[in-house]
Structure formats: C-alpha cells, structure tokens
Length: 215
Image 1: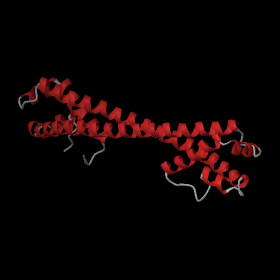
Image 2: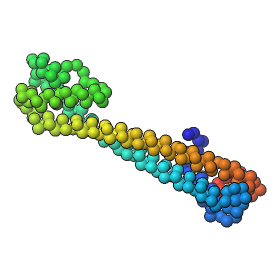
Image 3: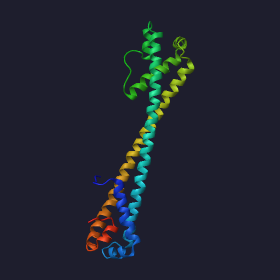
Image 4: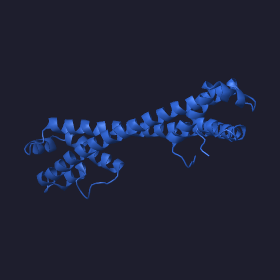
C-alpha cells in the first residue's frame, strides 16, 4: 500500500465524493447513467465505512501496543535496578565463597538481552530463596527473605508483561494488514468512480468540485 496522500486524506476524499453523490439528486441521476446508481453508491459507502472502522481499530491496537511497551519498559527498569543492587551486595557477602557465586550466577557480566537477563535473574532469586546460608547472609545486608520474594514476583510479572506486549504487537500488525486491505479495496472503487465522474461532468466544474475534484 503506497499512496501520495495520507490515509486520512484518502478517507476524507472518498467520504466527500460518495456522500455528496448520494445526497445530491442531480449528481446521483447523472452518475446512474454511468453505472453508479444508488445501489452501486451504497457499495462504495459500505467499503468506505469498513475502511474507516478498520482504520480506527488499527489506531486502537497500536495505542494498546504502545501502552504495553511502556508498561514493560518501566517494570523492566525497576527490576533491573533492584537485581543489580542485589547482585553487587551478594558479591560482597560471598566474596570468599566461589561455590555460591556459581550457584547465584554472580560471575561475569549481566546479560543484555531480555531472555538472558530473565534467565540470570531467575537463577539468582530461585537459588537465593532456597539456600539458608544465602538468606542469612543477605539479611545482614538488609536483603530479607521478604525482599527476595518481592523481587522474584516482579521478575515473574516482567515475563507476563512481555507476553502481553508481544500479543499486542501481533494484534497491531494484523490490524494494519486488515486496514490496508480495506483501504486498497475502497480506493480502487473510489478511483474508478472519480475517473468516470471527471468525464460525466467534464463541462461542469462546480459539480466536479462538489465531488472534491479540483481542475
């Protein structure tokens, strides 16, 4: 789908031409001679209404996608900050205990990818919550078992928000495809209609103007 006009301009132009023809007896009478009687005009109007509905639906879907993305980004920023703080304190608490470093995944840098981060953070909180030695030492640094549980819940929420964001993205893409198809169908009908109208009213610029055709 590629047009010189914006989608809004295409819809507005089609609405002007179709509605003005239907509501103007003289325009309709003349266009009926060229195959565009009320029945055919209502076909065009139906295509227009479908395109408008799908245009609005696409806008709604993308709005929901943006909201889901913002919600995910905000939650991800919060849990990353908390997790990094817990990792730093854990490295201090267990600097003489390499086995716990391995158990909690404290070695090396933190993963940049979403899936890598979630895997590292899950490893940390899963093992920290079930190791009494870890819980005891972390509690001394104000990382209580309650705080570990809260952080783990935030991490689980991240996974749910990511799934929601992917779902909204897929729905937005599908809505765009449906919108584009509907606008293409409507535009094909309108383009042919206006080409015929140019000939039907070639000696009457006022009627062409009523259809949105500027000479």
